[in-house]
Image (cartoon, rainbow, N blue to C red):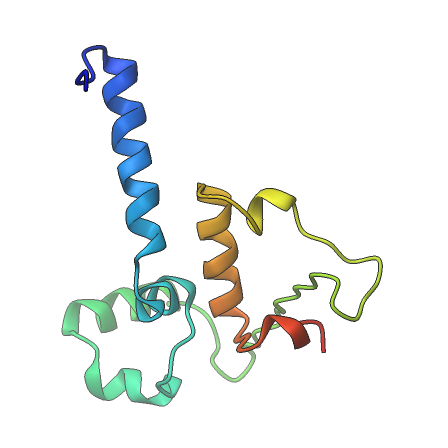
Length: 119
């Protein structure tokens, strides 16, 4: 077997090894990356490091907490019940970064069963 000699070959090998490693990542790591957190937000005040608390305080400086409202949503549909919904085929097959993104989105959305993901 010939070892990679060019920068491009070495980069491709690193990417391939990284992608293969992704296949063997435990689900808890994608959960950690994707945000499928099990803790309540209120626990942050008790467990966050002082530097984290300071950063949060700086971010909210000048914002009236009584008026602060978080409006956002996570929407994902893959076509299990919404017939017009789809995701890029690369996200559902093969070994690639798009597949890793899908796993992270899946985790962040709290999907436990892909067959009922759209429900």
